[in-house]
Amino acid sequence: MSDFGVLSLLPPLVAIGLAILTKRVLFALFFGVWVGGLLVAGGDPIGATTETLKWIVFNIASAWEEDGQVMTDLWNTRILLFDALIGAGVALIYKAGGMNAIAKAVTRKVKTSRAASLMTAIFGTIIFFDDYTNTIIVGNTMRPITDRARVSREFLAYADDSTAAPVAVLAVVSTWIGYELGLLKDAIASVGENISAYSAWFASWPYRFYPILAVILVYLVAATHRHYGPMLKAEYRARKEGKVLRDGARPMMTTEVDVGMPIGDKESVWVFILPVLALVLMTFLGLWVTGGGNAAYAEGGFQEVLSNADSTWALVWGSFSMVIVAMALVLAMKIMTLEDVEHTLVAGMKQMHFAMMILILAWSIKSACDAVGTADYIVRVASNVLSPGLIPFVVFVVAAFISFTTGTSWGTFAIMMPIAVPLSYQLSGSFGPIVYASIASVFAGGVFGDHCSPISDTTIMSSMFSGCDHIDHVNTQIPYALTAGVVGAVMLLLFAAGLRNGWVLLAIAVLLLVVLHRVLSEWYGRRAGIPHGKVPTYIVEES
Image (cartoon, rainbow, N blue to C red; front, top):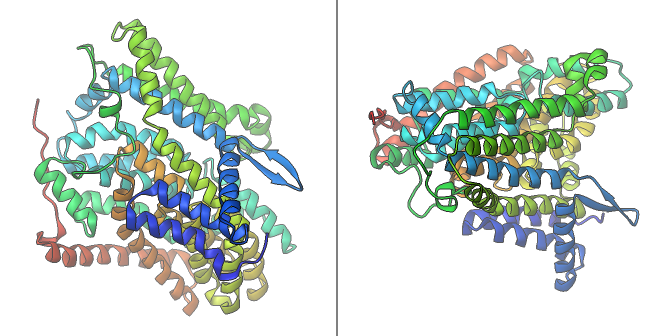
């Protein structure tokens, strides 16, 4: 890897800038990758194209070059297979009327847009064990319910996204914590301490301001119906006009168009419940088996199992089981013929192709950033202005920027943790609040930047499974993400000023968040001509 200095910022900045300006994500991502290739190729456009295509192919195949040899890890490939299978399963459930049936059943209890919004937040919090599984289940389950309650797809995607990674990064038991503990263990060992990674993880928890505030804000917005930014207009449009998508929107999953309307008159909630149950149970079984099962559990409990588990294999098993169970049900109940099933499965896979292309290019721009040293340059520049009290704040800002420009929170964790822990330990002189707040800032900053980034895989998947236009999701979510992010940053500045108790800072942060939400909704509501920024509550009509 060569040192390209400030030029290393070009690939992600070009991609993000073009995505926002042109609203053409594929074009923007490809051009961003190509700019990285142009740097690596020394300005040769043909060489740049060659590098771009190589990165794309390698990311499809989950391969990379190391010391002249091609290395493989099928993580990306399994995610693409999972996407195709989940698209097929969702399409089959939809076509057979399962989603309509569950929507009708649930909406007997969900009578208002407020109830539907809060249910989305609650459901997202309950699915805490994996962010990908969260986006799939919450988006697909709640979409027909929120549509019926005239809640915009933009809000559904926001609630889905903001209860995915933020919940997973806070959960004591999740597919994330094993990865987090592994990074912490290595970072702690590098400074010669023998403190357990788990104890450091717990000590850092109250300083994780962004994910905690992001989850609280979802509930606050859902309960009050007070909005600001583009979300206010989206929610007002949905309530007043019944348009859950804006005119001209391009949802990432257009099930109704690609698959067609449900057929037959044998709608059953079991066509929804059993395949989704199979997805969840087989995902857990996959985590158990790939994590070592009984042997790993005997050694360190369920967390040891999750630490060793391969979540991508678990998701493939879960999605495949979902398809098989759905097929068996619709054929046994004679809702569809075998020919109908085949056409629906193919159509379901087809509707995922756009989202899969975005994922491939998002991974490719990460490869381009690695090749030109984007993250290394950012860290090197930031390290010149650090002082002990400010370390957590600077770590948060740098982690957020790396995550935003590369679209990966996990990649950001891997880059920042080996730097943040030794740096904060050396400058503070002990394993205390500065180190714990720095650990928290790595996690919080990574999730914050990832949330704001249009090239993030979880942002993309939230758009995908909520059936939302991707750029609309990004534009409506950013003001809320920035609100939680700014409050979190202010708390870290208070930390730098000498207030080191994490729980006290968290209490102040929650109070400030409530006040800021109220002020922003009032201010933006006046600008938009919608009193208090409060959209009306829609009462679902009986059918």
